[in-house]
Length: 196
Image 1 (tube, one colour):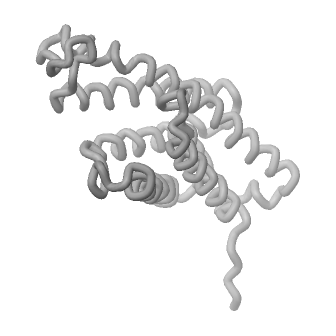
Image 2 (tube, rainbow, N blue to C red):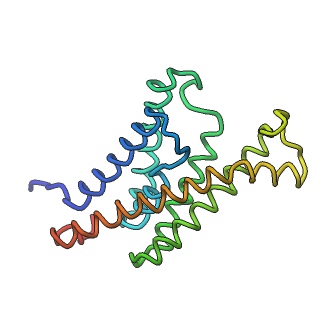
């Protein structure tokens, strides 16, 4: 019996690959808008639409890994080695965003997508900046390591605020494209509504 590929799965994978390409092109052009990235939207989208849990996590994490390897090897020419320091924090936070997509987007609507984007962004900001602070990040005002007290932690969060704001804007904009695009395709091609 001939096995055919599920059109929904192929379409979802095309969306994920498009996000990876957008990410690589964004980094290559050194956009003036730091952290205006499709990654938060990709995590939420994967969590919401891949019905099989392992696919929801594996496909976007693998896409993140492959795009990281390409960015580090081609754009940064290996200056950070094979992969950057602290990558495990980023991947863990990203897996959490996929989880938010699974939990907060059981019903796809604008309100739930905006709520999930805000929760994902705040989590990303708090957790990623906490990792910077814990690993001895630099106070951009003084050039010295951040102090290991409440003031140092607050300074770290303050320094990360513009990146958080851009991450939220990117997550909302790319979520509109991903979720809106897929929902429009489902109307045009009803087979896409069936689980992969």
